[in-house]
Length: 259
Image 1: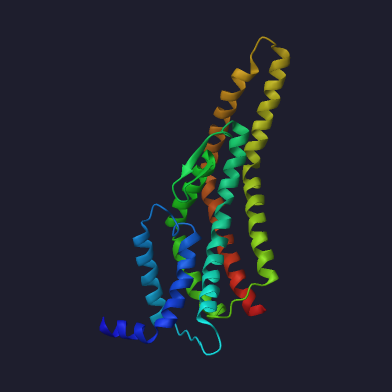
Image 2: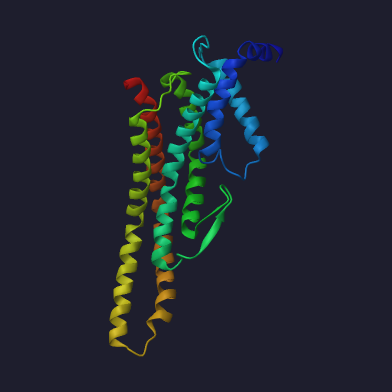
């Protein structure tokens, strides 16, 4: 134990920079940034990960010609961007749930997301929690930590620079999350549209029937049935989104090598 602290003392500047990059991921990425996890536990886990990276990886840093403050900002940006990419793809489930809520009649029903303390759509929160559990079941959080470790191979300390390609990549991540969320909600949109057509026909053929009273519960019932039926294929959908998330993270890291 004494040797470990002695090594950390000799590399205290390197350890602080590693801790900053690790903390950036813990601030915004799914699972690690959850408000349900005590801040003390997150700080301790971030500290332990930083210790392991500092002692096991061959990382060199030179402070002769670079301000330490500049290095801190650069390392924080690397961690934040990795976390942002992972969270950006996870927001696909919120987009999907918001569209479904509006179609089946839950548009005005919001719940508090305990992770970020904001109001989120009801079905969006349901899909997000389900995807969150699937992420843990397939050890997706381990993959994010592996990306953190591999980031030092692609982006050495002090080598980060915000380029136009990175800005376009972040915009592309947000656009993909919206497009994917819309595509996933399309089957329910189509079924609810057919339900609306059916209600319109009934309103014309049976004028005595109050379509507004019958239509809302009917659309909610049909929507919940379709959601229940589609749950078994949700695993494949979520796995595809996780794989795309990791692929985009590594594309971000490789952009510095190619550049």
